[in-house]
Every structure is written in C-alpha cells, then in structure tokens.
Length: 176
Image 1: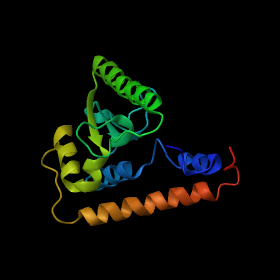
Image 2: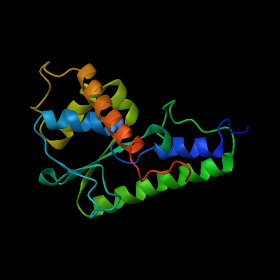
Image 3: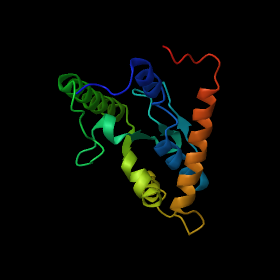
Image 4: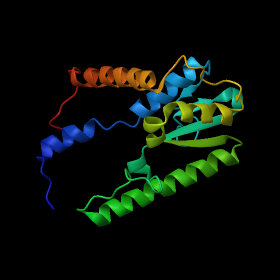
C-alpha cells in the first residue's frame, strides 16, 4: 500500500507529532495542578526524562501514547499495513527501551507509574484520582468542581495554542 500523502505533506504531518506537551500530558498536568500537586517536567537528569517527576514523593510518571508504546489490548495500538518489518522493529525497540528505563529508575529508588493516553482521554477524572492515590495522597479527590469536559477543554486550548505557535514560527521550515 502506497502513502496517499506526498513526502512533503508526510513530513509536515509527522513534524506535528510531539514527544512533549501532548494533549494527554496536559490533561494530567491540569488535573494534578488543580489538586495542588507540584512537579517537574521532563527531568533530563533521570533516565528516560519522565514526563512528570514528583521529587517530594520520589515518584515519576510517564504518559505513554497507546500507538507508539504499544498499549496491550488497546485498539489505538494498531500496526500499519505497509512496511511491516520496519514498524515491528520500531515498536519492539520502543517497548524494550521503556522497560529498560523503568528498571533503571527503579534501581535508583524511584517509584514509576505509566499512564496511557486512552485512560486520560476516556476517563480523565478517574485516572487523575488513581494517580493521586498512587502518589499517597488518596484523600485528595475531585468534589465536582472540575469535570472531565473541563479538563479536556483546557487541554485542547493549550494544545491548539502550542500548535499555532509552531505554525507561526519563522524558523519552522516545512520542506525539511
């Protein structure tokens, strides 16, 4: 099966795929921040640069995309029909890297939690509550002040703002 996009169109589309500030990350960050949690983003001093680091709890959270990190049993973890060998190798390397990084962090004494993209887009409030319980602050939970719709809306606004800043970046060359 051939690609329906030109090389230039595919390049521009793939350049929009970000490894940070993704919609699922924003959903989790907004919810946890509203509950009073403070964290560090992408701590490059730790193996794998976890998405959220909570030094106070000696805990790190990875927000994994279901497609790239192969969420078991998730329909979003589909495999492309073309170039199968390439994609199998790519996905296998991603999963192995994730396991290796988690082992390294655990060996350093960090607690690790993986939160999946589909959990944050389908059950944001419940997922944020699960993270708060995991952090050891189970008495903090939503009391109806923040709804799933509001979390998704705030995250969507932040993502649109980020994407528009990429589109308006004079240094961004879509021909690359």
